[in-house]
Length: 319
Length: 74
Image (cartoon, rainbow over all chains, first blue to last red; front, side, top):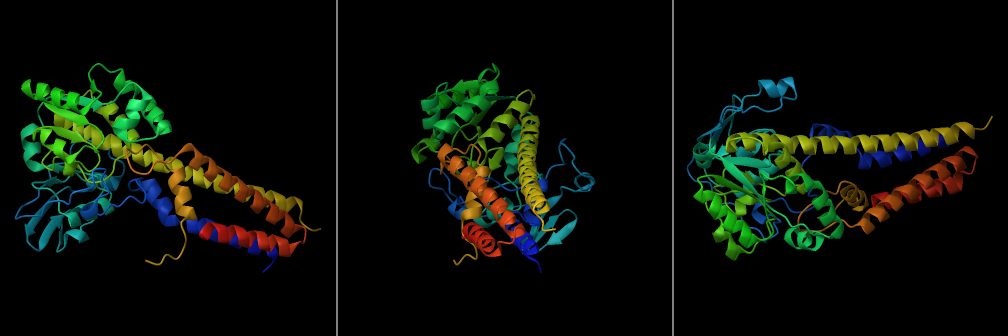
């Protein structure tokens, strides 16, 4: 083997370690959370408040609703049945197949699953592993899906306040303000700059028989959790720690920019059900396109380096 | 738990793919500058190694390639 081949093999091994087909496949299909190394075990969720484990699963049957309108990306998605239920203590039904263990069920990212209780730690862990970030509470879904709603966004107009509210540094605070510009300038969205103000708005909206959808950073003290009304909806990381019975529960850390973009795409809907259908779809779509973009950048960078190596080898080859 | 490879690659990927996450460890502009510098230097070293290989200087070229691979898998 000549030395040029050795060089190319070494570089190939380098890229294989960092960029392998499995990663590329995942990127094109949409990777998991970008939270990185932050612990995802639901029992020890690396939440900003210290974490609380999910409640134990009791005797319950879990159902799905007919698939709502959402972007159908592939023929496989179009054919996929959303039927999912628990038949007994040791049997589950999903997509016209039977499974004996919850951890064996091949949930899909875009599955919209209804639970009538908070997921257990192992269930949440499996769902996160399968890329499912949001689940629905069946009781809240039944009662609230046709309700009108108002969005309350916890944000301040200045960088220092945003840094405090969202536990971010200077750079990310500026970025968050930049990406939130549309929401901040949107009259339909209620902006509050403190938790106390958010609780006050929550009560005001409930008094008008609408559902408040609260968007904030989950770093609140446990003593304040009681201020959340059971009927309120929450969009934050690991929202099951705040209100496990809310219509939509998030199981993992969420991307703030994706949240902002998804709310921006969905605030025009009339009912809570329509809002969440649009929100979750937009969130996943945003994250998918972000991962695809990253993959293309990696591949493009690899091609540039490879092209440079080839050019140097070509123009310096021995006669 | 024993890891087969180190954290350099995962760390680099984490910084490159960093988004806005409330709380937790933040990726600063300094981190990003270091990662970009790391990548640029690596590319330059790869080009240098290629040049040395093609001009017959295999020993230094091999040393450079070994250093690059060793750096990134640690």
